[in-house]
Length: 234
Image (cartoon, rainbow, N blue to C red):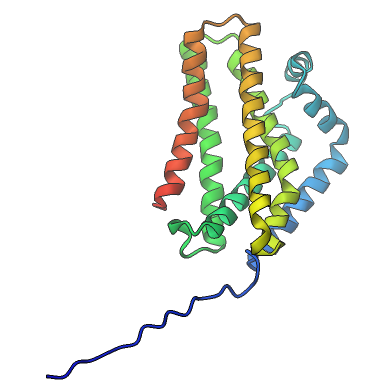
């Protein structure tokens, strides 16, 4: 009887580069920088007013009365920037931590992640319309959505340099950058909840509606996004 033996190569497969860089990321980063530079150059006064309204509810309500806050070109460009930066950070985090859904990465997977993130926020808009109709909302939900999207825009702007660092910095030095990114995202999320509570108390809304509101517009979309990325069924 013959026994066939085979040697298993246990040599680790090294990354072709010492960082998380992939060629298509150059195009994404350049596009994001161009979008932000254009928005900053053309809508400088509006941006200053928008970000002031993030912390001052009176300015927020004044801006909402005067302008089309969701469909204005500056708002759309900043939202595109937020979606792309968050998608890039999620993609890079997935590669770094070797998540199974990124076994075969690339631009296509990045675009799918961006589509999921954009879909979550489109879903928030649709859910908010349903809640406004069901609860007979007198403006609270619309104000909160404006605050929510505004904080997301600010998050995207702040995270841009860190996202670039995640692309190009040596992989052995990424732990502290990832920790800083997590800290910033958590900080903006907590600030968003605090601002939401400030808005609701100004309307003297029942705590039952506040809990329903937070579960529908905050927790549920987050769970959907986390579940989609964890299962990797896309």
